Length: 205
Image (tube, rainbow, N blue to C red; front, side, top):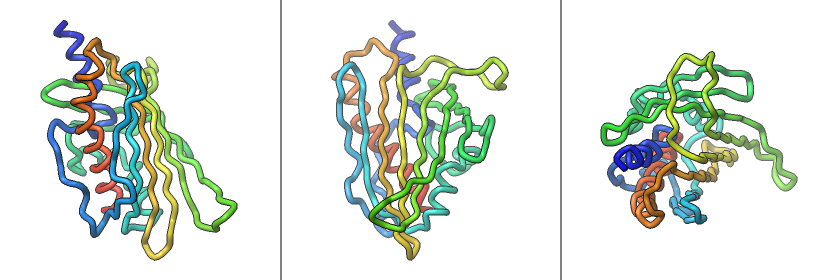
């Protein structure tokens, strides 16, 4: 039973951004919330977080901050002990994370894809960043453990000009745990929303 609960704790450290405490919403001078982070239960222990905001920062800088995975730990993102870009091409990368929550370590690889988006109704430039957890390749240099059954997400960035960027965020997560769904939701309601808030703050810096 203790091992199963540990797996639940591993899952809560997803993507290196989950917290074991609450934080205030991002500074209104940097992040103007259109829809603050909200959590929805999809059933079968699967949860989705959505958020939407305008950042007082250019799309180029927001994108640079969002994919600067080598510096997530030094950027003081809670729970990230270490992170490294393991491989990279022009439009994709594999990232390894070592995260800790309450002393429980989570080690995992994430496939990140970056693609331009086009709009028929507006000339604004925009970019989509999407990610999902992937199995470790034997040739990769870092250890991993089985922390989640499912983890996917995406960020859509749209330049509004004048150092303003519109952001939509979504992530879907299924922890690898025998803990009842209502208990998972009690924890994740706070933690996943805080994760999204932290990500928006970091991108706006």
